[in-house]
Length: 125
Image (cartoon, rainbow, N blue to C red; front, side):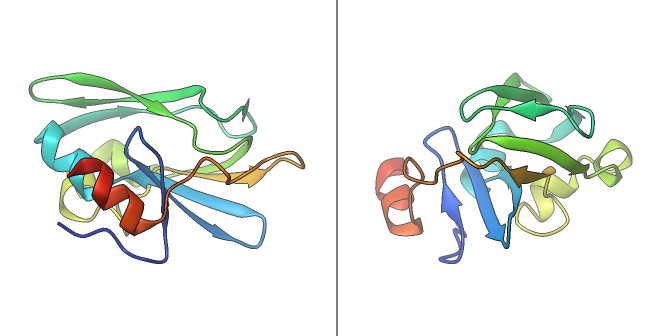
């Protein structure tokens, strides 16, 4: 399994990459493997705001539906519309073309609860 060192992770299996004040979010390689073939994703609208831990969408696989949890607080500035037509990109490329949303971090957003790759790998065993 692939869990890049340059990303941060949540205990709910989302990954976060922060560049400047924008956080790109997706689900981890571990999560997509556990879900199986992904067939549908539901995302929020651009400009919606969320607090860390809020549900921001759902991901549907052949065998289950799961909530997606916001890893940081902020406002949605972009959603990956390509996943509407190609949700399997989450399976084949969870850290690249399978990203889900981009968030402009709020002033009080914190990364204190996020895990580094080593801690995430230890958590999933």
